View (cartoon, rainbow, N blue to C red):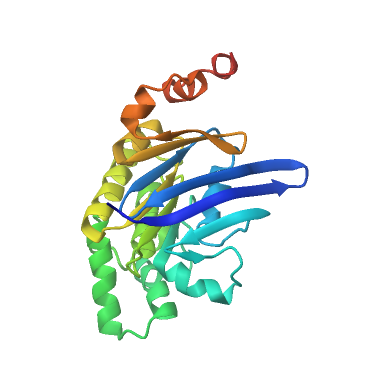
Length: 251
């Protein structure tokens, strides 16, 4: 039986008068891919950023591998950030650095590895995302899909235990989105990484998710497997999966 890696209890978060998270609770098991879905602006990314301390909630707790992280100061979060990596929606590559320097950056910041070892690790991660030999290219030379894959390679540089994906297929065409889905699945198999994926891309969610959660009005309307999702009688959730219009969604 897999152990619980993330345990989130009663998270609440407001921005001014707007409550984004409302006593949200869930668990992510070690080795699984947990997908969070919902409409734009529903708080998916806010939820994701709680898991590595990029944001803190107004109340509630986040426990990673038995350690409560919500009260940790920024410097105390450094060891967590080595274990929990994040792939940002934009990719967040350094435009002034080539691909090699981008992927090497976390290795130089957080380890004392020799340059020969760093080069070997960069090459390994580029092979993993199916982009060997592009170390000298600049981010401006890359397509949107390639930038996402380089960003994924950088996220994997420190061999994290968990990887948080914030809308990994945003702005990509269906073929490139499917490639990203394949890489998420490959990463789990190759590196035994626990994944939390925030997306509104239903095909991606079906391709990678062991468990899916549907976020609306600050809490989950549904959490379960895809078999359970397909059998759900929640019409709002089913309408979202079916891609109904706003009028149909609100009906």
